[in-house]
Image 1: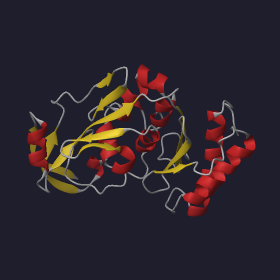
Image 2 (image 1 turned 60 degrees about the vertical axis):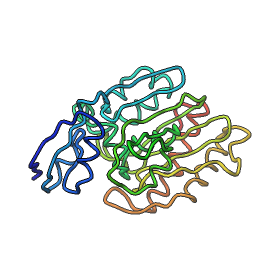
Image 3 (image 1 turned 90 degrees about the vertical axis):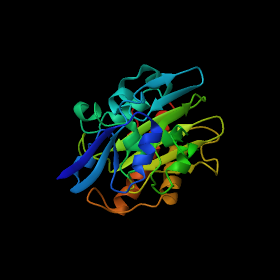
Amino acid sequence: MLTFRNYQKVASLEEAYELNQKRANKIIGGMLWMKMENRNIGTAIDLSGLGLDKIEETDDEFSIGCMVTLRELEIHSGLHQYTNGAMRECVRHIVGVQFRNVATIGGSIFGRFGFSDVLTMFMALDAYVELYKGGVVPIRTFARMERDNDILVRVIVKKTPMQVVYMSERYTKTDFPTIACAIAKNSDTVTAVIGARPYRAMCVADETGILKHGITEATARAFGSYVSEHVRTGSNMRGSREYRNHLIKVIVRRAVLRLGGKQNAD
């Protein structure tokens, strides 16, 4: 059972930060994973009154407040268009619409969960996070940082020319992913981001130029093998290390072929 001794709807980020420095206190977002814990919390810190529940789009970037829900990511037309549907694909299997109407991007990103589709996707987009005290940090750096008592304020996606594809392998549509994969291509290189390995998502760039001269069945397969060799995997209830290594080869090949225009890669 999860119990709170106090509840505080804060009036500022500074107030939230000060409260959050006490170990017994906790910032609440959607509370969807937290409510499954058996613990006592001193003060539940609610950020819902700070106006951080909006997606703001300019000519140069998307600014996504930490209280934006996963459902809002799913249905936002600007993000859908910019990612060619990959944003919608990365969240549509997360439990169900009712869940996504409550779960927040702040909780999904700040938790840096190994199973996170959302973290995998935003790492592929080479996004940034804005921390209240830590400032603006590349999300790929943030993913490697240890958790602390700072506050994630928003996620920033720069509108740089890129293509991105998101795919995942699940036993059922609403289960956690056994492996997650986002492939991003910009003017410089192709990068694969592998999540649910089952550790935090990590990036593997095409540093040897496997895809430099074009995407074919052979180069896509070679890049899948390359990524599998450079990603450390592990075993849990959803799959063994060996199974995940195999899945990476398959899912990266399929995602790269889709990136190259083949929509039904098998």
